[in-house]
Each structure stands twice: as C-alpha cells, then as structure tokens.
Image (cartoon, rainbow, N blue to C red):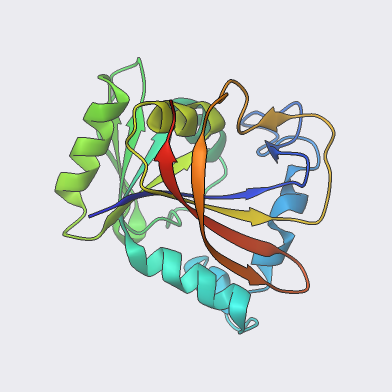
Length: 204
C-alpha cells in the first residue's frame, strides 16, 4: 500500500491562486490549473455528467481514481470544498480531514464519508490506510497538508499535472521544502498538460 499526492500545478509552482476561500475555491485564476480535466470522460462521469474526451489525460484520471481507496486532506481544503461539492461528493471513498475541531462523520451520497481527525498527520494517514481496502491512500491537499506529509516521510510518490500557465501569486506547493529529493518515474505529455510522476526519495 502506497501513499501518494496528485495535484495540478502552474509552471511557477502554484496550486491555487490568491484570495482563496469557501466563496472563491482555488483562488483567483486557480481553476485555470484544472482546465485540462473538465472535458475528460472520467472526470465528467465522477460529476454525474455524460460524454467527454478519451486519451492520455483521461487515462491518467482513471488511473488515479482506481488507485485511491481513501483520501486525506487538510481542514482548509475541506472548508473550501464543503459548500461547493455536489451532494454526491466526488471522492467516492472515505476522506480523513486533519483538523483541530472535532466533528461527527459526515456521510455523503456515492460512498464518500468525511471523518475528522484531531491528531497528527500520521494519525490521519494510518486511519486512511485502515479504511482503504488494500488500495492506496491519496493526500489531496492543501499545500500545508502535503508539506506535512512529505516532511514526515509518509509520501511514496508525487504526481504533478503541470498546466502551461503562470499565476504569479497564490499558494505555492514547495515553500519551505528546502531539501526535497525526488526520483523521476514517468512523463506523459498532451496538448494541455504535462503529467510528471516522481518517487519521493528524501526530505532531509
């Protein structure tokens, strides 16, 4: 069982634009990072929408969705998503939210239940592993959650979908990660995005 990160990122290292919050998920201009996703058949199916494109980008989405048996995220990502996700939340698997505020589990349609973990990042990932049914655990974000998991040595591989844009401001993924060491594992390129996968070797 592996723990992995899968995120869209700009050429200048941002995973969200400035002024993000529940009323402005992904921040100003942040949805541009995900334009490659929205027309793909696998993504549309996860939103209950028909049709869509097939090809290498769609294959990457299908691979990630098949791989993740449980998810971990930070409270800020959850707070942005809670008012914006549909009633059938897009994860279709258990989600463990690392938070300082206790809360009862929140079941949604389609197999997603949000569980709220008030311990450490290690606690959240261990609970996700136990719930993943033998599949892998995906650390969804936000940036601080991903950095915590990387610093703790809990992430096995990191996949970045590099959108051909710059944002200039917003949420940078690797701030403070001064000695992250990655081993290139795979490159898949298409007209709208480049998928880079790395194995995580060390953070110290």
